[in-house]
Length: 109
Image (cartoon, rainbow, N blue to C red; front, side, top):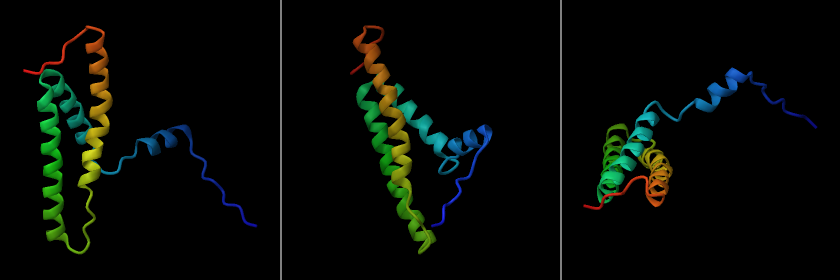
């Protein structure tokens, strides 16, 4: 019975491995999700509209990249959208909590 040795990481290597991202633009998607949360605070429907525009853009980009790089293209626009959404939801949850506490107000107009 063979046992696989687990690679032992130093603390710095473990942090670097944790920070390794799927691709270089993930940071931009996270910032866009934060932007959408802030926009939703200022005008709630606009935050949803901006996220919908981003989803449409990523789908359009996937279709064009697939045509240009066929058969080697691996679509990842949905992952880009999820990168943004995963940041928008908790960011907006903080805004909702502050709204419930009366510290700020979400605008609908």
